[in-house]
Length: 471
Image (cartoon, rainbow, N blue to C red; front, side):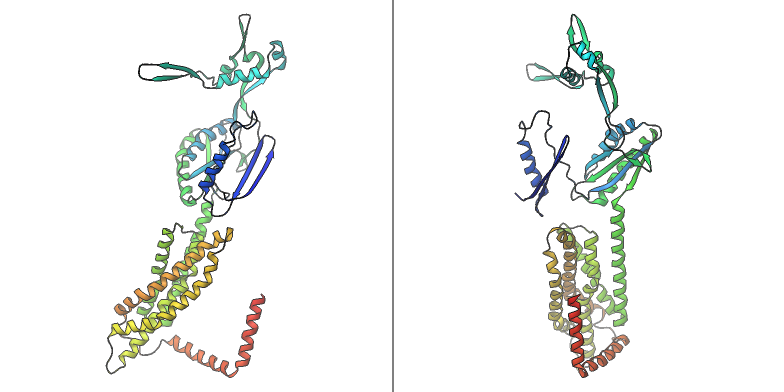
């Protein structure tokens, strides 16, 4: 269920099958289904073919760290053995790490180099050598012993661990004499035939590519891996091995991108506050409007967390885009409240300030809500995107929408309360701020010119619209 495409590729000794499922499929469910299908192949594959194995639960962008090992004292064989049995196993124990791939060096192996003429002399075949080598290096059961209360399984611990021990393995007994493996072959500990190589700082070494599980936090996984490397570094240094854990670190790019977005977020907030003060020309109204920024962003972050979204470059970008919009609703409400309070003080019998503030907010409530929902309609289609585009831009649009909705709630609840506390009973300027007076005068002149030359203005607007549509 949910299978979109199925591809396979084969080379000598290896076949790879890639199954692609539709977007939104549960990775754990499909892996379980595939595992069940693979288990059904047991006993149906040709002799000598190993059971199929599923790759680790990683993605194409799951690499968190590229680790390098070099040494002037250790051989390539020893270096690879240490990487496989010390470094790799320690990194696999780190929470959130799914795979550690090792490249370079020489893989240690016991090689049985058969001498054909000796096989012929003792009338033996290659299969006899293979069976003897497997018995020498394998762990076998030795039966069981029944007691009054339990059955105890017996296991031998006599497997050969050195080339010399393997060479003494008996093949056959002829005429009271034993033919051992060393009589027909040379047994040595030597590297496997190399498939590739690795360079670290221009020198032969070992590379370990550490991959995180799908859904793991890259920054957190990187910190855990680096902590594990710090534990290994002193012991490796005593063995003459230099460990490099910074050859490739995607966390640097993520941290830099997040830092840039946070910087843009902070600068945008500062500029908005400055503009508010310049145009409102009163610190109380500027503070009331500015409070909408942290409250709206905090509310959006809390909802994102509850929905399982993380604070990444895209969600932070959506919050940064929303900065100018989140103060708009609050500015409209507080500006109308200040204007109504100023008019109320000119009345012979002023109304209660609480009633004035409430009526002022209610007066613009409909317009503020309609304008907010109109802006949200622009971003709603982004949430309907599918595939890579939907995964990429969906969190950005969601963060923007949540911040704007939160700003509407702040404008209708927090802004009136702050207006009552900070400006309702304080001295208010008798006139509009200087910048607003200049802006209104300029707007009046422009509007008068447009009214006098309506045809030209309409033609220019039409040409601009057509030009924008053509572009």
